[in-house]
Image 1 (spheres, chains in turn yellow, cyan):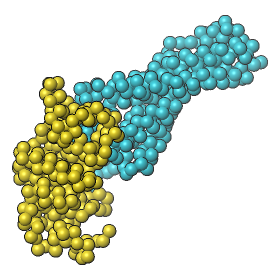
Image 2 (tube, each protein chain N blue to C red):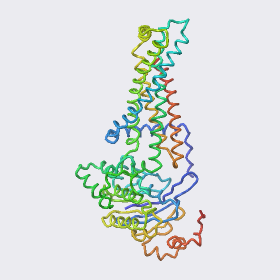
Image 3 (spheres, rainbow over the protein chains, first blue to last red):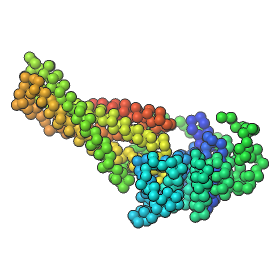
Image 4 (cartoon, rainbow over the protein chains, first blue to last red):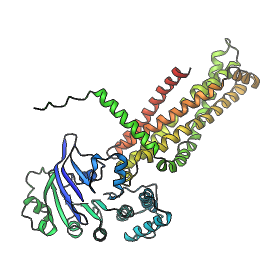
Length: 249
Length: 252
C-alpha cells in the first residue's frame, strides 16, 4: 500500500503540492489525473524518493520514504518499477542491456536473467528487438521497452508517468492492456495521465489533482458521474468554462 | 510559546554540505560492484583516446622551449643548458599542466555533456529507480579512470616533448646531441618525473570530478547541458591551476 499524507513540495516560489493526501490500495491501478503542470509527476517522484517532500510523508510498503538511508532506499526501490514519460532508456545500451540493468542488482543467476529479459520483451511484444539501440526505435517502441525494463524485475509497485502520451491510438490501447495485465498479476499501479480513455480502461480508481491537492477520488464510475464542476469539466474535456480558481495558461 | 529556531549560519551549512558530499563519495567508492565494470572502458575512453592530443601539444611545446632557451641563453649561459631547461620544464610543469588543460577541454566537456544529457533526459533518475547509486555508476569510474590515465598520457607527453626539444636542438640550434643530453642529465632528479605524474593524477581527478558534478547538476534542455559543459571546462582549468600552485608549495 502507498499512503501519501499532507504532502507539500515547493520549487522556489512555486508551491506545486499543497498538503496532498492519497491512499493507493494494493493490487489496484490508481490513476492520477490533472491539468499539465499541477504536480502529477512530482507526486510520482516523491513516492519513489527521487524528490524529498518539504512537508508530509509518503509511506511505501510500510516504510516512510524520506526517513530511509540511501542503502535502505535502494532496497525499497527494488520493489518498485518506474515507467518514465519519455522512457529514459540508456542510449548507449541495447534494449536487452537496458532491461538487464535492473535485473543485475537482484542477485539472479544468468539463466534467470535471460528468462526475465525474454519474458519482458514478450509481454511488450518486442521479441527480436533486444539487439537494437534506443535510437533505432520509434517512440511507441521506446515506451514499451521502458515498461519492459520496469516489469522485468517483477516489482510489487509500478509507477507510470504519462504512459500513453504521444502514442498512436493502437499503441495506446496496447499500453492500456499491458497496464491491466500487470494489475491482474497483482502489481499495484499508480498511473499519471491526462488521457481519459487510458484512465477509464486501465484504472480501478481515479484521483483528480487540482491546485496541489486531491480534489476528488473515487471509482471510475463515481468519477464519471461526478457533479464537481472541476472534475466533470476535466473528464469531459470541455474548454468553454475554465475551472474555478485555475489560471488560464 | 515555543521560540522559532535560530537561523543556521552559512559556514555551518557549508560544512554540513561538505560532510554530506564526503559521506556520499565514500559510499559510492565502497560500491565496488557498481563501478568496477565501467572502469576499464572509461580508462580507454578518457585516457587512450586522449593520447594523440597530448602528444600533439608536447611536440610543439618541446620545439618552442628549445628555441626559447637558446634565444635566452645565447651569449650568457652555455647552450647545453637548453637540455636542462627543456627537460625540467616539460617534466615538472608544462607536460602535466598543458596536457591537463587540453584534457580538461576534451575529457571535462565530454563527461559533463554526457552526464548532463543523461540528467535532462531522466536517465540518471532511471538509474536511481533501478536501485543504482548514480555517483557509483557514473562519477567513481570516471574520476578513477582519469586519475589513472592522466599520468599515462602525461608520461607520453613528457617523453615526446623532450624528444622534440632534442631533435630541434640538434637540427636548428648550434648544439650536439651529446651537449643536449649532458644538460638534460646534469640537473635531472627522479623527483622531476614523479612530481609531474603526481600532479597530473590530481589534475585528472579534479577535471573528471568537475565534469561529473556539473553534468549531474544540469537543468533544462540543450542550453542547460551546454552551460554545464562550459562550466565544467572552466572549473577544470581553474582547479588545475590551483592544484599546480598547491603541489609547488607542498613539494618543492
